[in-house]
Amino acid sequence: MTLLNLREYHRPETVEEALAALTPGPSPRAWGEGKVVPLAGGTALIGTGGPDVGAVVDLAELDLACVRADAEAVYLGAMTSLQMLVEASQLAGPALGIVSQAARLQVGRNLRVAATLGGTLAVTGPEDPLGVVLLALDAQVQGAVGSQRWAMPLDDFLEERGKYLEQGGLITEVIIPGGAAGTVAAFARVGRTPADRPIVCAAARLAVIDRLCAGPRLALGGVAARPVRLRQVEEMVSGKMLGDDLLAEAATLASASVSPPSDYRGSADYRRAMAGVLTKRVLAQAAHLVLTAEPA
Image (cartoon, rainbow, N blue to C red; front, top):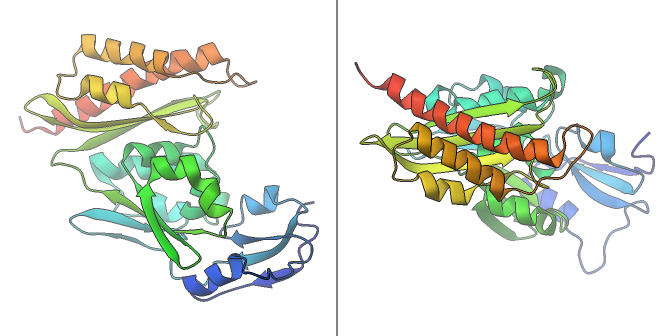
């Protein structure tokens, strides 16, 4: 059993109230001999919370569950459930459909109806499809800690999230910026079975302008301690035609750019090889999407 020492439960109605409850002051409140943590969907906290949790701040009443879009971007509230991401009409089409695909792969339906976007990003693991996809889509994360608001690229947040979250910070919104006209995205994975969690996964976003790759973004999961961008590969393919030779070079560079760990699901050599295979696959899939979308 977890949360054995839970003594207090709080349910604020505003972000400000939640931050006040989570942020220690000059004279920290007593939390039943344990720390205070936010409770979003609870799918991670209930399973791994541990006996050091003395109080929870339930975020269910905060007005942060929404999916909206305008001409500039798609805005996802931090309390939006993963099932809402699967079903959202705003997350469809050749550029954003991989968000729904990744949310479906993240966990089974019973957990998707409870798990939230913010909670998922707070604990994103190395192979998590949603983290990989949002990284490739140049997602921005907004949040707050105490009286301070912050906004940063997801890549920076994943690198420094402990600094923000351990201070009582909250994720409030994730923003996916719109790409250039004709932008498409692709996702690919390898796993022990089609239904199993990925061992390695990859996502790419790009546009093709005058048959040349424009604005490429490439992210990998399962090759480091967290999802990562492959900026060297992005630079290699940018402004070039995605032919067979360039795709082969991109795959070679991707494999050489990562130093994955070994575990019972896949050796370092296997993960490195799959990094190359999946890099080539998602770039080719994205290029194919552009070609098939062009009028005859």
